[in-house]
Amino acid sequence: MPSFRPKACLLLALCAAPLLAACEEASYFKMAGYSTRGQLAIDHAFAERNDCLHRNAVAQDTSGSTRNQIAQAVAFACQTQTDHLIAVSNPSGDPRIAAAIRKDSDFRALGYVMKAETASR
Image (cartoon, rainbow, N blue to C red):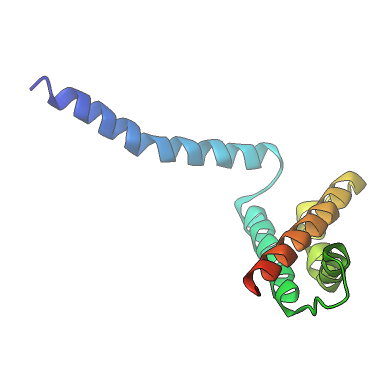
């Protein structure tokens, strides 16, 4: 029976870890003022913005333009999704958060352009 105890302890630790992580994440969102529904709205807005960036990066004509110019066009094409993401994730209207999300959109647009460029070769 001595070999059963370490296995049981390991099994218990493996089963408890995801539950503890979920509790920690839930308490973080509660402390930050987000409800589970609010977090789902933010996740959905992120996904919509990222899908838009990806679709537009793949659809762009790359002839005669630099990567940065293409990325700017992609980010501009997805401005509606970026604005929605800012609205749901920044209810206080903090301009620093809005600027960070716009900067993230520009960065991700460039990444999607580079991936699309690599895939087309």
